[in-house]
Length: 199
Image (cartoon, rainbow, N blue to C red; front, side, top):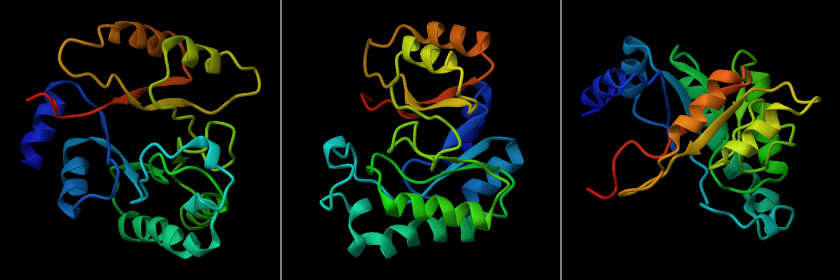
């Protein structure tokens, strides 16, 4: 089924995939390398919709020292195991897991181990030093255009998730693509998700 999915993706002109929200099987990366799909490889750190009010609070595992080694291990294992796959072009620190010292430490370790690939993480917002790619989730077209016009911002923007739709919704993909085509720093995004959950 992995091969079938990749063939469908290539037929639909996809050029990249995000391993959400955990690393994948070895064969997946090999197939992506063979068929020419770029991969954002994501650490197995997911708390799904972590409340931003807990960003700098010990209730947030990323701010609680008791969780530091477990969180760090998620990133170190990911990069240590997968750094030789040519299809991987970006490391992701996780998904919707808040932000705190453990995330910053993971980003620092990854940069020391592999300075050839950028890091993305939406959990702390675009103003943290832990992300080399601005990767908002479900940002509106007006919002991504605003980021593109910021004078002090030189990082690319790639939507880590957008266009989540079930049934008869999300009819504005052309507006996103007009923005992507007309602004060099707006480099696309990852449609959520590959399989229609309504089927």
